Image (cartoon, rainbow, N blue to C red; front, side, top):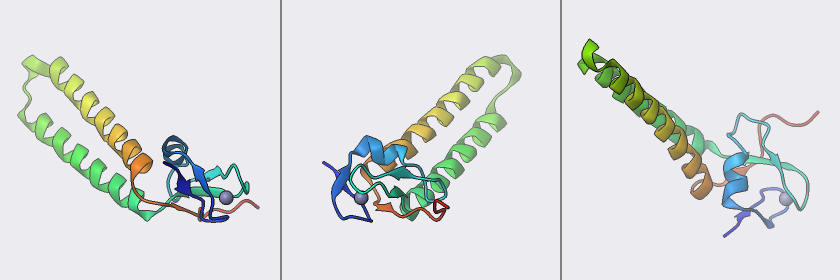
Length: 107
Ligand SMILES: [Zn+2]
């Protein structure tokens, strides 16, 4: 399974390469075929913002409900929530959305 480069139309990006190409606001990654930079489109930005809001809400709920006796436990759970949200946005970039040209162009 490969993703199509928006510049040359060839299927050059593997899911992992696509995930590592970053978001719309990043520099992107060069296509192995044409060398032009590609990154993930707006879908990944929307997904990232939804996930970070969800993670923030979960952490706030946890923070409100935690008492001083289980501080270590809630710190661990918060770290897990953050790790899971990063993993989910990485997986989303791997399998969903399409590659586009980055906004930032090489000078
Ligand atoms: Zn290309």
